[in-house]
Length: 216
Image 1 (tube, rainbow, N blue to C red):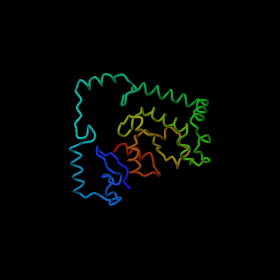
Image 2 (cartoon, one colour; image 1 turned 90 degrees about the vertical axis):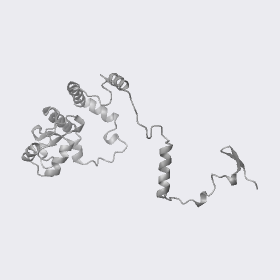
Image 3 (cartoon, helix red, strand yellow; image 1 turned 135 degrees about the horizontal axis):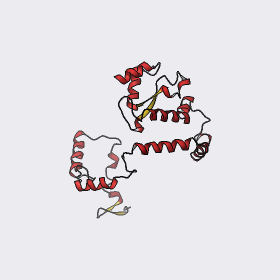
Image 4 (cartoon, helix red, strand yellow; image 1 turned 120 degrees about the vertical axis):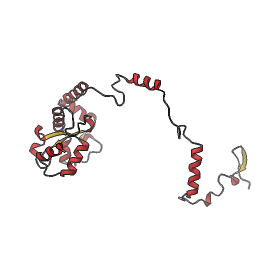
């Protein structure tokens, strides 16, 4: 019985003579290319790149760059925009004022399906340590530390809010009564925080250690 006739690349073939299906049974699944084959594939891709910009150098004129720079000036939503200290302070004040309102917290809890309303609720198995660190009191304590230290890392002077953290001078776990004490916190960046605990460990930390660390 003659197979069905198919048109492949402008030529007519019977389905049993399809050149694209020939010798497919001899191919080994998961077989690897030889180094010589890899080199040929690499050379062919460099000669005939699939992507337009592959291997090309992008060039933007000075005029184009200047126009883009001018168009983004004053745009607070532009990526990488540097916001003033006044803007940051006002934004922080508005955020704190909202979260201090119990009605707003209740609304956000229902809106975001936090706690028992969340579909992934498993009966309240979150450790008490995480609950305390994510609480409103902890957030207010951290903001108070940042404001007192003028939003600067006291070690390396980093001033990006996203890179800062409030460090407990006396350990969080060993001194529960001092967890939210303002004089038991200091602003340092995340990198300096890691370095501090790498040098002095995570237990039995003292005020003398933080003084010594800031002088290093």
